[in-house]
Image (cartoon, rainbow, N blue to C red; front, side, top):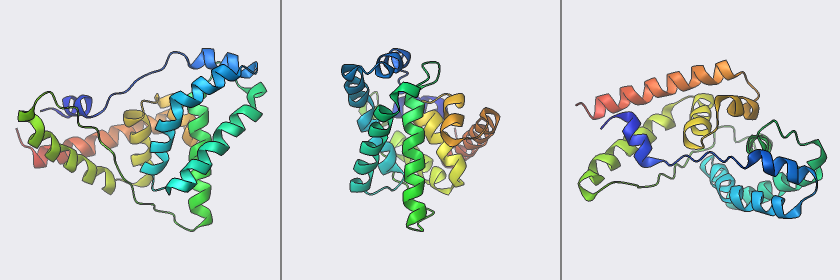
Length: 193
């Protein structure tokens, strides 16, 4: 099974075309649009924070702070920029502040991988491959792993991830190239064809 096929089985990435509409409506003070945006991204944002090792209570607090900040600063929302990227950037920065304040600079990562196998005969192979992938991700440098999670697992574009991490899209591309090389190499070693 190829690396690409494995990822498509393991993760479903959804791009949301409503981002610009939400930006415009929230900017105008539309509480229905705000609640819809909140309902759409709250759980994925929560999972993202938990996957970085943020304690549940703190993740809940961060999410409340993120959406409060979004609402309070709604007049400055740029509809030409990703609203999803904006809230992830706020959450990511608050999470870093949380760990910095506690001098916990290398939180343990917990990956929650969905099992979306096409049939029972693939179960063992996919389970083993996902284990290999998880171990490889855990060994990656922090920034490379974060870039991979944002772009591949969370579905952000390179430009959106660059905005969240405040680095250039070219740096994002370089991290992704290296992350995919690392994963291909690990899967070839553990699953020779």
